[in-house]
Image: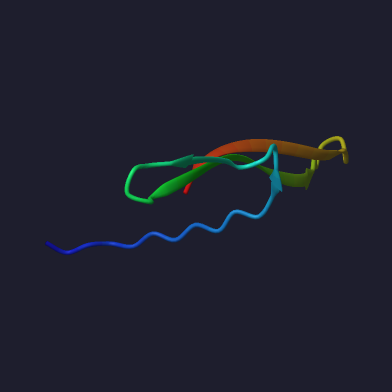
Length: 59
């Protein structure tokens, strides 16, 4: 079976503190929200538009 690897890089702002969850055996995960912004100029109105998207991440 051949595998694939996908890589994503998100650069943004944390929405809250990271919530850690610990499992038996020493493993753990962290959950947090990250906001990323896209800024562009509306060509019709020449207005600067900022769009924010929230990402729920588990690592």
